[in-house]
Length: 89
Image (tube, rainbow, N blue to C red):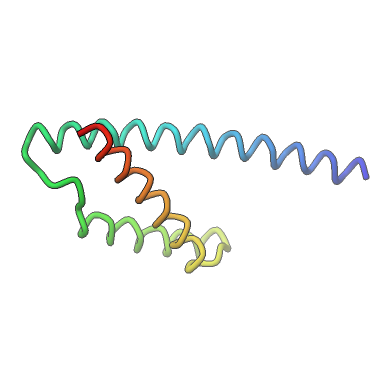
């Protein structure tokens, strides 16, 4: 049981790091949104989103993750960032 508890603690630490990095990503996206508005660009950049998703699917395979599920997760992350960029309008 101790081994399970230890591994769960490791998962908790990893989850915290994931959240920290997600927060950092959102802050950067917010900054990009401000720059886009100042320059008169659209918030949505479909081409960039396609590039990110293709890159993520490729990386998923290298890390032995399911590419389709990883893509779904990243679609949600992209949506989160898009919402943050629109909220600041």
